[in-house]
Length: 189
Length: 189
Image (tube, rainbow over all chains, first blue to last red):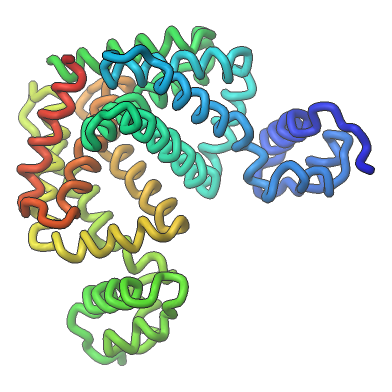
């Protein structure tokens, strides 16, 4: 019977971020991550199937799920873009609140590692696909669903980029609103 | 001295698309692609460093280069989004004209292969980064540059998706204009 390991996944993620920041992603082994988190390598592989996955779960997937759920729960008659922005703001509050500092360190690691950038892009594509799917389920046509989801993804990316810069404001939902305002200005100019 | 092989890269791409469509990406070998194109395996590796690369060059890179060049060449005072849309329309006309049918088959292969989807996402990210860079070189601030490039990428993706559907109109520049109109409608609703 496995030993009870409270929040092993969270401790492994924290340990991985510490080690990747200090010595680089490529040079860090799974054994070192497990040792720093105080668990066995086997426990690592119970939670993640590859070293790179430790930076991509479970929050990326939760963000996607909560966003889609909130789009689905929007009142009938809500416009597609309003539903998307509501979903993203709700998910930012529910999933990412309090995680600004690890998110900023995580971004530094990903930007330094092409393999991780490819994975990050594919997680973003999954978020966009989930938002478009949630809109289609509400009867929105395919082109409108893709475009509204794409605008949402762009607003999310812009806000997250700002949120993970040194000295940034700490409310991601507020930054989402600001990014949407900036986008409207660009379109209307 | 190597034998003169007119348009070996183009013939290898055509052969690869034929084979990937007929028997799947995973089951096709580089040797088979080279044989169908009438060249040696060594010639394949003179042009591409990996089987997956045969679907991603040189047109993806040319599209990115021409778009950035046209953004740079826009008259002073052109708004960021106008410059981006001009760049994408010009590049679509210069690089992708006449390639609708192979583009549609290429899309089918990529959608069936997660490894290729990751690569496609990273090529898209490179296009967005090049557009944002060209705007920053014109003195546009970083957030506006990212957002205008992101809108351009979304419009490009939407138009290309439509262009590669069965029975689609054949002018990609026209579809770019239509996608931008649809995006404006979603923002303004």
